[in-house]
Image 1 (spheres, rainbow, N blue to C red):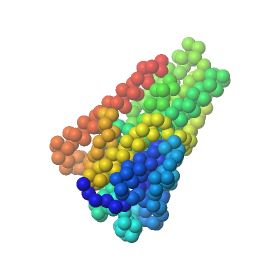
Image 2: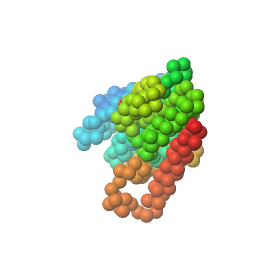
Image 3: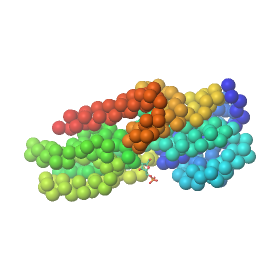
Image 4: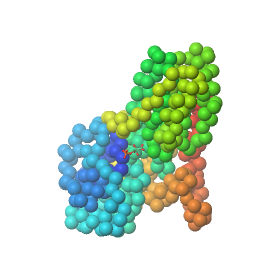
Length: 353
Ligand code: F6P
């Protein structure tokens, strides 16, 4: 059991509902072990700028139900430099911070590794609405964002029905189509277009045309933002080729706000407590993941490589350099992830007719 006196907690990257629940769990789990907690404001930028406050239990009172992050967030370019890193380490030393829990996406994890290497043990927790971290089945905020999306699409469907229109809705997700696929399935979208799965536009238009011929008045098409510069043009083509009046809606940042759902509050709380347990056990440079409904720890370097492998960002040389046993473990994670994505996508395709 490593000896800690004071740890820091921060949120970094795009905010996500449930981050507050994770901050609360980290704080209270550490305090229960007699370890002090510094709330670091503004992510890694705040760490470099020494923006922090010693947290008492009351500082995280009443936040489990709140969206956004009470610690604020930022994307900090300077943190990627040696100077930025030196500043952060000096601030940790000055404030007697001997460990950090960092909540965010893949950029946050790269920062966590850099800190761990330089002697500040750091544990990452996946927090992003995108669910685009390949090492974990789930990222905090995904469920809330999708519930916001389906609520908004249900509303769009009402007005589409009244006016016999089609609405093409673009949802967030960066390069990942997870929000689009699951919210499209849950709202009965007639077509879902995402960047990572080939999309048959002709077939989608034909489906809309034939459903209209059978008397259907309203149509919802969901497009992931990862299918770049596509949704608006597709809206026009639907109208031109079917004669159905069509509208385009980009949901935007509204998807990132709101009170977290039960799923996000519970998962964030479990991950927060688990992260503190692992840190105090002496583990560092790990990310907390959900794999097959269990909370587990994974080495950050391994997790980042899995992510690159899944997204096709590893060169053949980089792949060849991975030991075979490790590579086959990584491949298994990627295959399971892809199979789940395809199962959801195909279910949406089958059930929308
Ligand atoms: O990663 C979360 C996310 O909301 C993505 O879905 C989106 O592409 C991006 O952040 C938007 O970033 P910003 O808030 O910096 O505009």
